[in-house]
Image 1 (spheres, rainbow, N blue to C red):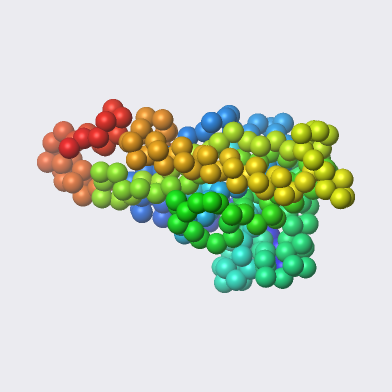
Image 2 (cartoon, rainbow, N blue to C red):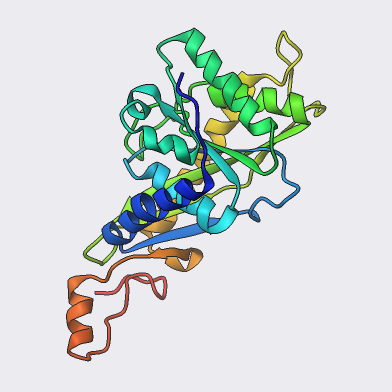
Length: 269
């Protein structure tokens, strides 16, 4: 497997130049909604798991972490991708080869090691394993994230899994809007009797995976309903992108800007 080579300075440079700047030039806005407070300094190790519907998904997760959560983040990436773009190792990327069971186990153990050896560690994972259309149901996950959570909880006492629902829509502007909706975390605790045990005595990874599928489906459906109803007041702008051509033209002519769709939770015409 390809291991991470996390470097704080290079991580910041890559974030600003290859993540935030492209988001600013490609989207009208990036919006955020969080159903629970951001992880605090006493949070157990964190796993962020999201749907994988677009090339931009990891960018959105990174902007959430860099702008709001400020954890020491790592991300699991397909080996074929990371072998091409190895500079992402400086941002905490490491590889997984799901086609090789032995290699996949190595990646799971590496993820557990990264999450348990330092403070405020987080892992981003897309357990669908491939890009799927946003509204495809049911969600089907690989069990790797569940296994990682089970092992981390057994090693440290607890693991917090945060569902990230991600969506992209054109809403009245030249460029699309991107949405991040963070649901309440699933907290897997070592001594919690609510989690049944596998043959090794660890919290059952299959049940954890099923719970992950359920809560992310619910968060995705909630996000879809709010976005298509233009309930944008439920979200906070996280990144503001470039203006549409009509807004630039109106500003040059010193005209009052037209109201944005969703400003009062009602569509404008």
